[in-house]
Image (cartoon, rainbow, N blue to C red; front, side):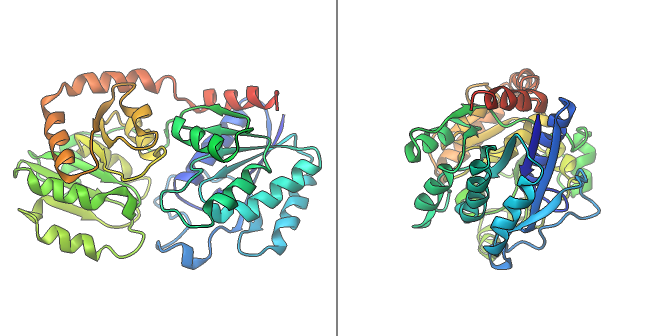
Length: 373
């Protein structure tokens, strides 16, 4: 099959670029002709408050030789991008969708390709965003209707899809595991490298820091725990981190919260996931999270709030505990409960799940589904 992919690829960095690179490799491995297309400009600067959108020398990014065709901030590029992709006469165009900003650009490309007889499939990260704007639903609904079919990676995303587009054709397939970060290392060595206390119970908060992810709740929860606990915060903040610094200064024993407020390169990821006993997702809102995939890879148990699709990847397979309420007290209670539970059982369940969540299986499911579109 001749597959065109239009999304974030190298030299862009981050979870979406990693996802697309892994899926690209899986399609190629299955003897498909795969044509990767990417953005000339992914976001205008005002929509990206991070330091850079591009890979650094420390990232283990797959250097996919993609073709830049689409400037999301330049409507004149939408048709030219569609023309360039159409020139290759693909059987299917595969895209990824995670926020309504991309609805006009990706939607117009999808519409043009469909008119020319190409099937269009989108892998959905989110349908209804975590931080909603008034235009999200109309923009997203219009975008969805330009597609032939979808892959939803959680039941909550699939539910949101059918709420906006009841006639949508979709399959449900969980997020595959990221496997390019390397192997787990000795916990004591990882703690030493990060400057952590060697004998404290170590909790990890990892990934982009945004309001909906509930870091403020986790900081206060750790403040309720005794001195035997330490929290590692690792990730780049979208916006100022000062409010969190102020919060940390006012908890009991603030020195036990270690902050790495920056983009964490791929080469550093094993340190954080090897040093921790558990990864906590105290999210106020969620569909699914790529962080669970990284935690699975390093066989690190998870704690998460009962929001969106998180319970599907944590509670059902028994790889951690769910936080029953989105509150500081509930987070603190669940952390203490985790340390009384059988951690080995969580790890055993993770090992069982890992065998099912391969990129080859994910790509195979897409190719099978596409035949019926």
